[in-house]
Amino acid sequence: MRDYFYRLAAFLDGALQGGEQYTCWLAAEASDFVRFNRSAIRQAGHVAQRYLTLRLIDGLRHASCTLAVAGDLETDRALLTGAIEGLRAQLPDLPPDPHLLLSCEVRSTERTVASRLPDTAAMVGEVLAAARGHDLVGILAAGPIWRGFANSYGQRNWHESASFHLDWSLYHQGDKAAKASYAGFDWDGGALRARFDSAAAQLAMLRQAPVGIAPGAYRAYLAPAALNDILGMLNWDCVSEKALRTRQSPLRRMRDEGLRLNDAVTLAENTAAGLAPGFQADGFLKPERVALFEQGRLAGSMISPRTAKEYGIAANGADANEGMVSLDLAGGDLPLSQVLAQLDTGVFIGNLWYLNFSDRSSCRLTGMTRFATFWVENGEIKAPLNVMRFDDSLFRMLGDKLVGLTRERELLIDSDSYGARSTASALLPGALIKDFTFVL
Image (cartoon, rainbow, N blue to C red; front, side, top):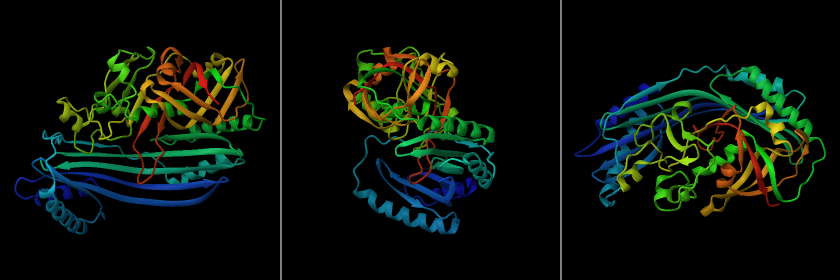
């Protein structure tokens, strides 16, 4: 795949006229998908796809298109020839773009991680064996992902890795299910079994009659998946430099007024430890680590090339949406084994969903509890909790109301496969919070 992409780039080098330049971005994968329901295979398939985004540039004018390429050089050269001619015809009618910033310094990179995954059939066999006796519903995605960048300056960047993601629930009835996931680069049957056992233990608790609690503030533990749902909201124009500059970011008070989170909060975009490539679609390299929060203080932001050009600052490899794709929240001092004891009496939250901002100016979030959420008394899970809506500010949850973060962390790989498998990931602990506010 790499040689094929480089040969396409060489063809583009020779197809330019006058002062034209180009950039191109390849997103490709060869993925196995297996869907389960009632602990049986209901759908299995393989997706092999290659999408090439080509941008033709002349001065400050540029136009782009995305092509589904076949993987055959002769066929794809003809396709690219037609695409270049079409883009070339558009350029004279387009206005100059004052915020266009190109990666003119040639910084070529290659990162190829050989697949360590077993055959998909072997993984499926272990999943079905672990699910025996349960009503399993879920999906397994596995296989290599490729990303490539090339431009007319001669820069070439390549990223290749193979990973898997198993996202599943053990279903009881109605709205009661124990949700879990297992993802990574190395398949471990023992680790899979341990996660199934944990989900099965939650399922046993879900068979009890649920309880309800009155709206109010309760001590709560957010499991890593639930905390990830909350921190994922930071990608809604929170850590974006453009949003901070235009005062649209819900975190603007942290920059303008010096507002801080709890000292335990140290969060970064950690490309070195994530799945995403170390370069973005415009050819700018991503630093191994971009500090966003250091001991509760807003320490940085995600800066795209366009924002960098507009404000005369340096880009830091952010994508166009200026969001995180390799989130890394440092662990704390709370041992995972002591979570229930430290929670004492309160709510154990496994997952959240339907999150949105209820008040962007105060970084206030609202959402619903989901799946395995339990009422805990004296350090013991007593019963599943009926669905509740929370409404609270991130400044409180991760500020003065944060009791602690777990020492152990979990790698969560984004299961999104709409259009293509995601390369986003999050490495983060669980969080113990006092006075977590439920409104109904």
